[in-house]
Length: 267
Length: 201
Image (cartoon, rainbow over all chains, first blue to last red; front, side, top):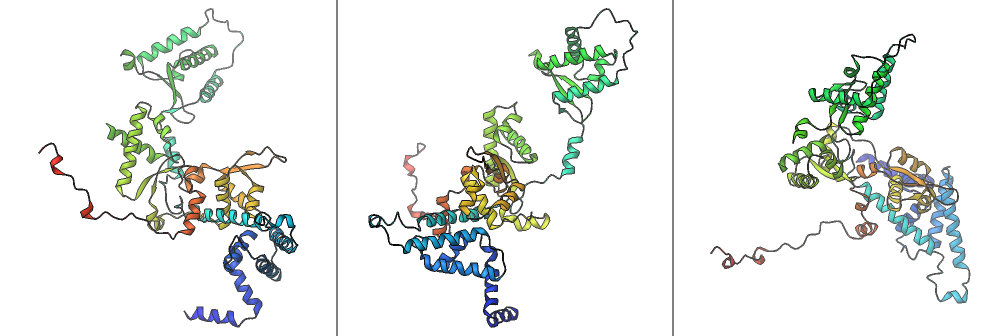
């Protein structure tokens, strides 16, 4: 309590400029541009926004700019533009009006444009305060927080993970790399494997087993031809929506399951 | 059955990282009838409304999200630190202008505020509250801005239509804020059911 008293008395006893200093430092972060300053001055002088005394407002506005200069603050160009606008309005008011225009002075009021801008600005200033007063997520209300490591762990756990076509292609490429380089003196086998045969093979395996792995399909006959034909057969099967493709984990082996459960097929 | 479906939906909303839409929930639960999912969801919403617990099921950003009630902010922040996202007057003003007037160019924002908005706009873009919608087909092809889904999520808005209208905001300024309540009907004035009309007598 004593502290605030001494604070007050010190302000009163200091020279005029320091008093301004005090006043200014209070207002500095409050004014958010020239329109904000004008609104403040209108409120302070209890003026009607539709009938602003331009002379009063302009004088006080220019006082603020002078003060900013005295405090060696950089005056934003926007403030100077507004000062010029105010002076222009005042000078237009001083000029004698055209006799023809005199009848309709509301429309020709040089203040009209400024008033319109002030009202519009005031509207958004208030809208800003209204939305800022809402219960903000992360400040007033909180969602359920799942920390990053927890999520990652959950993703790495083994479990079916539907894969895209590109994962399938990657797996295929990885498999091709593992195939030993072709030896050129080998005699080509007489009977070539057709995709249709391979599809039938896979389907018959799937009838016995619920799931198969790509590696299992080519284990017996690990040749380039076999791998390619099997891959094409699988693509065809997934196109026909007869199988679904899963990956156990990231970079893990790819599994295939029949798209329709066998029980449903029987029905 | 329906109760179990409500429980399933609750588990999905509980684990969702961001607000999850009704359509998305229906897609995830494709083995159930969409209408059943919708009615189960409505049941869940009603349950949360009547529960009066520490958290609620909020309709935000076109979806559903579980969040704590604002009334418990002081208690919750004892455990978890609130984000220091205190918005300055200038950023709230700019955000309000973008929210109400989108799509809007920077020059239009600056005309409304009468001041340079470059810095404010950049920080709003960094916070992902505002996004670039494209370019306006006028000379210079300036960028046009709008609010993002994050804006709706953070400000707890269901959609842009649920922003208070500018007229409502003006009304707030004029009328002192107090809860208006209709006059309570007094006990005697309550229409008493006429017993003789009952068919069982």
